[in-house]
Image 1 (cartoon, one colour):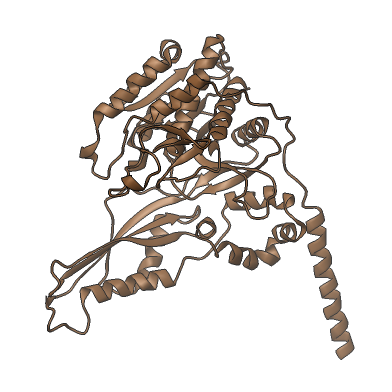
Image 2 (cartoon, rainbow, N blue to C red):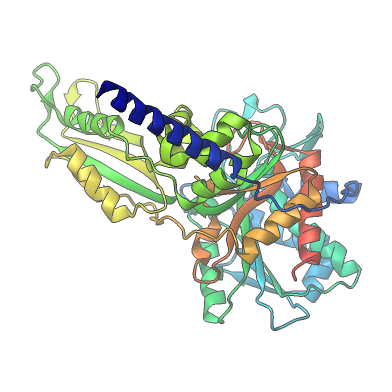
Length: 481
């Protein structure tokens, strides 16, 4: 009997190993083979245009009353002066005073258009950090092979690259095969009402685009574990955005006679419960695509794990969970961002309030997540309300076999040598979230190489990134078949 059991166990082990090896060896590359083209050198004029664009303090503040219209209108005049042919030959519309929408008529009206997106606004410089910057954040300085300044990464590199490429092609009397729209929102950092207006306008006109391209993934040389070649991370979906306000009201009083439990105690206990019980991990369709497209390009052991997620999924999840970006790729995240309570050090507050921010994994709706939060807290004294910031459900997922994905994959490989392309879940937010009813082919990708200082101090992109970005958008506009 024991021999029979051992034989069965051995047979099962052999079958398991055989299955794992079979899946690994048939886990073949899904990378399209594309001949790369050498990018031309960036002209001094194009570089000056980019650095000049950084001078405009097109800042989105939390308080919308602080918006400086002179900076946005000045930026518009700069675009008109710098790109005269774009403004002569393309139809331009201004939405909500500052958002810009351009239409470049294509040769073939039978083909659906494409939409190229970027945003004009930038985040503020954190008060008190100005002196920490290596350069003036709005000076547009070129130093150590980088272009420095607020907006270099997010997102004026895309906006200026689009305009530069269009102006260059118009000088050649070029006309794209498809109609191309440029949509440049003015308040992406504050929720994107400009982009909403553009999307609603295009929808009202019956526009259905085969491709919408907005900021998102990047070209990474070294940030994808297991990859020894560059990777173009092309966002095929993005997480949702939800902020909730937790509030507790309980009789306060003099701090010399505290009750056993205060409003702050109840509130902080609720936050601790939520932080100690994270939402269940899962592979969204974009993350599954990441595994399928990059797994075959990795070393044997990693390839084996990705080829057999039915067996190794817990191990893969454990690896992802070790880093904050990795953890954000596999689950809905929750973090407290604001806590308010108390007015004086010797007064126990009556009201304690906290704001928690969540980024929703595709497949997790806000209603289901709120219900889970209520169950986890399990305390009727903690009131849960929607915060005043906007709500965005997780985006739809662009098919890896779509025109949109394949086109951006090909162009990325054309402009950067020996690059692997991959679907990618964007964990932040973008204006393209509002274009779901305009296109089923939304890709979130910025053709810059490992940018530095996103939303932070010493924001900058390399000169090579700008060169690649210019070449990328030129090649895309030339090839819209």
